[in-house]
Image (cartoon, rainbow, N blue to C red; front, side):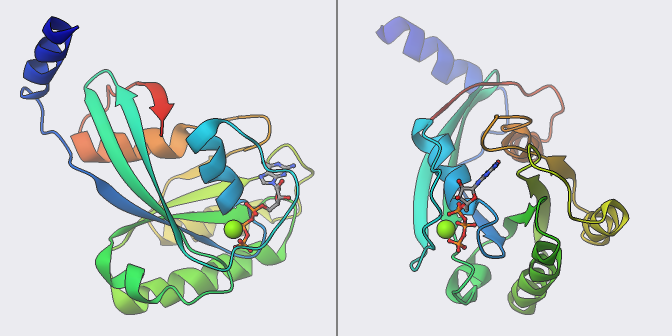
Length: 187
Ligand SMILES: Nc1nc2c(ncn2[C@@H]2O[C@H](COP(=O)(O)OP(=O)(O)OP(=O)(O)O)[C@@H](O)[C@H]2O)c(=O)[nH]1
Ligand SMILES: [Mg+2]
C-alpha cells in the first residue's frame, strides 16, 4: 500500500541509511562461499561441489528494523586472483572450512593477497560447516580472527546455524548501531 511505503521511507530518514555496499567472499577451495550466497539468494542448499571459475555478484537485500540494507556480494573463486575487485571494495567475509585444516592456511593467503590492494579492509571470519567434525585448530582460528580485528562466527550453511550472523554484523557496522535486527533476507 502506498501509505505504508511512505511511512517506511520517512522513518528511514531518522537513520544513516547505507547505500548498496560491496562485500567480497574469499577463502580456500570448497569452503562454501558459493553455497552460502546461494542459500541467501533463494534458500537452496547446493550439495554437490562444483568449483567456481568466474567472479559472480549477487545482490541481496537485508530487511531490518531500521530499514533495508542493499548488499552487492562478490563471490571470488578460490582459483582466481582477488585482483580488480580487491581495489574497489573494503569489506570481506573470509571463509574457513571447519572440517578441513588446510582451509585456514588458504584463508591467510587470501587475506594477504587482499591487503596488497587495500590495507583498510573490514574482515569478518566465517568458520563454515560447523555441522561437521572440527579439523581446524581453535586457538589458531581465534588468533587469525584477532589478527584481522574481525569477529568470528561458527556457521553452518547446511543447518543454518548462525547463518545470518555475518550479515547482521555488517548491518550493525553500516548503521553504526547495535540494535539492528534482520527480519528477512531477499534477492
Ligand atoms: N556439511 C556442510 N557442507 C557444506 C556447508 N556449506 C557448504 N558445504 C558444501 O561444501 C562444498 C563446497 O561448496 P562451494 O560453496 O561450492 O565452495 P566454494 O567456496 O564456492 O569453492 P570455490 O568455488 O572452489 O572457491 C559443497 O559440496 C557444499 O555442499 C555446510 O555448512 N555444511
Ligand atoms: Mg564457488
